[in-house]
Amino acid sequence: MSQQPTKKSPREKKHFLYTTDSDNKSLDEVNGSVEVPENAGYWRTLLAFTGPGTLVAVGYMDPGNWITSIAGGAQYKYTLLTVILISSLIAMLLQAMAARLGIVTGKDLAQLTRERTSKGMGIFLWIVTELAIMATDMAEIIGSGIALKLLFGFPLIVGIIITAFDVLLLLLLMKLGFRKIEAIVAGLVAIILIVFTYEVILARPDIPQIFAGYVPNIDIMTNKGMLYLSLGIVGATVMPHNLYLGSSISQTRKYDRTDKKSLAKAIRFTVADSNIQLTLAFVVNSLLLILGAALFFGTNSDLGRFVDLFNALNDKNIVGAIASPLLSSLFAIALLSSGQSSTITGTLSGQIIMEGFIHLKMPLWAQRLLTRLLSVLPVLIFAIYYHGNEARIENLLTFSQVFLSVALPFAIIPLVIFTSNKDLMGDYANRSWVKYIAWIIAIILIILNVYLILQTIGVMA
Image 1: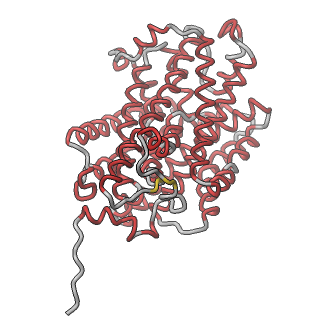
Image 2: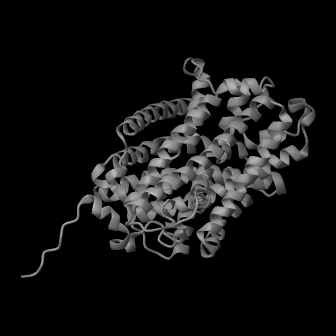
Image 3: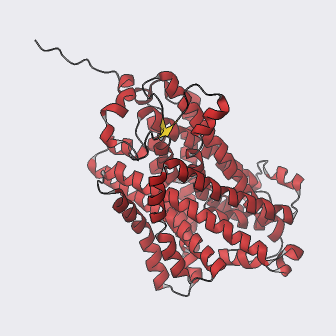
């Protein structure tokens, strides 16, 4: 009589996902590729786990955030700093949940969503999520293209084409190792942080008013214009593709995935890395708003486009004696750094979503080229059609925020459901208070984003 195989409990299954499902790992070529010291001290271990948080954080300071943050400061001074603070805290909670989901289950959010839905629903969710990736890439590609024009005088279409082919750079970097990608993105983030810190120091903002700006103000809810800009800041900050990305790249570290202590350590240090990097993103977004408040509040300047900001920083009639070509050039360099770092993570997110939702199997170079072309094509067609009309091209940024608002619930709701599922997560499922806060955040974000969509449609009409 043959021996019947023993049935694994849900908790046992989750620990063996990595060995029994090795052909379906998220980002298989880098999954578990980064060595982690076993008996090192706290700081050395944290350094080994540092990196995924940086890739996630760049999505929270991409070019799509810039206009809304600087305009928020220019129109309402430091009042909307509290919105940036709240958005950053929400991001920390959601990204921690995404990282924990990936580490515990061995699957990313796209894979789990597809497994637990019908074929038709899976295709629908893939389309919605793919639109979100395209929308995210729009802001990054347009930002990079405009930065290249401002710095080197390239026609915008040429800048967009150059940006489109930076996917080839990612292919090269992946061959060098995932740590190289993390290091390059960290370097680009450092450039952004240094540039805006320098420009804010030159602007000499009112420090007491800055701290007062982080205190919630009832005017934000009662002032229609302030509320609309606040929703724009939230919509530009909390983006769906980062949740898919975070659930995948949290699995790049190599450790004993069947050992409970190793699993707990991986969660602890990955979440610490995420929170540290998102704190840096919070600082950058705060600097953007502070710069807008210190330089442009009360000047009645039109700051609706990147080129307007670039020109304003070189106009003494607007920003006073600190105006200079250097200030404008530093702004463009930071914009290019933001766009390039975000396009790297956007391409990775595209691969995660295609592999997770539709199990796309093709050579990595073809897969990355396809995901990038899907994102770039709408921008390129729009740029060719409206050649010479850059204002219309930059209006795509508004459309991109609408797409992101539509897609956000389809990422947040599955994330909360999965991380609250004890059969799936075992001891690492959300605690009750985390689950309730997450649901409240999800519901509020959905309501606010529906309002933002309706308001945006009304503005465009």
